[in-house]
Structures are given as structure tokens and as C-alpha cells.
Image (tube, rainbow, N blue to C red; front, side, top):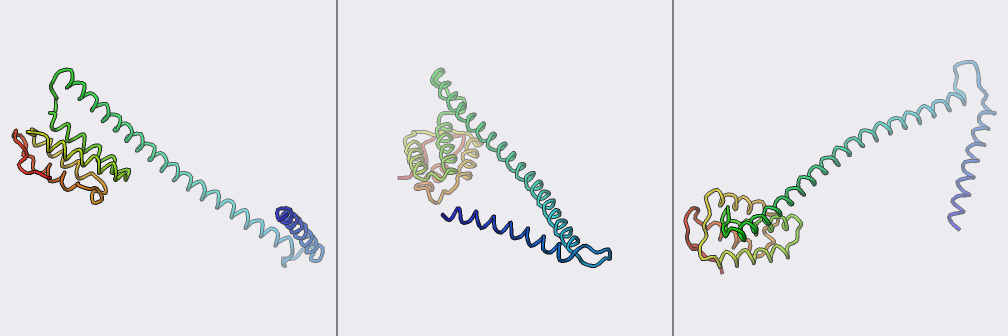
Length: 199
């Protein structure tokens, strides 16, 4: 019922505006002098409306160009991130198959194990999946504690520390400080058991 009432109200309003404009035109006819008359008022209102519409179109065009640039930048970032994640996945699979085929790991099994865990932790922390991060931290700690020796280079340790620094929301992750402690205890280029443990 209210839908029909709104429609009828809109139609009656439009009719009353047209009748009012016609009455004004009849009452105040056009004069040849430069005084104010209905035609000048109508032309002024129309000029104002046209100016507003043109301004709105210019603003929309500028805003559309800015939004298009933002969308393009986001598309490039998503494309880069997806390619990076895909490459990391293929790299991990390659390393596993390489080790299974040859019995050797090009970068060292110890480094690959810790790096893979920290990469998982990094990407999961970016999605705010704290429960999954807690599970990964638990597995990293367990894996590092079960290793009899850890053999990595100085550059590899720096890369592990860099990965740790990239992990988001680390204060919310249970046991994260233990992983930091375990990684910091590794002495590069020396085959040794971990000098300090975490329970």
C-alpha cells in the first residue's frame, strides 16, 4: 500500500511543480528590459544544474582512474604472491623428491626442515590462523629437539632469523619464543647437538 502511495505522491508533486512553473510564466511574462523575469530564473537554475552534473562527471572520472590504479596494483600483488607461493610449494616438493632419489639434500636436511616449518608459520600468521600457527610451532619445536645434530651455514641461519622476523602476530602464538630460542642457539657451520634445549 505504501508503495502505491509513494508513487501517487511523486506523480502529484511533479504535476504541481509543472503547474507552478506555468503559473509563474503566465504571471511574470518576459520583458525586453534587463530586469528579473521567469526566463532568467529558469536559465540560471538550468545552468547551475548543468554545472553540477559536469562537476560530478569529472569527479567520477578522476575517482574511477584512482580506483582502477588501486585494483591493478592489487592484481599485480596477488599475482606475485600466488606465484611466490606456488614456487615455494614446487621447491619443497623438488627438495623432497631430490632427497628420496639421491639420498642427499642440496641445502641440508636440517635447514630445509626448519625453513619449511618457519615458512608455513609465516604464511599462516598472515591469515591470522592462530590455532594452526600453534600446531606448527609445536611441530617445529618437536622436530628441532629430536634432531641429534643441526648443521647449517651462517647464511642459512640468517635466512631463518629473517623468516622469524617476518612472522605476524607472534605474541599470540603459543611457544613462539621457544622456537626463537632454539634457532638462536644454533651455531652455524658446526655439526653439533643443540647447546640449549626447550622443554
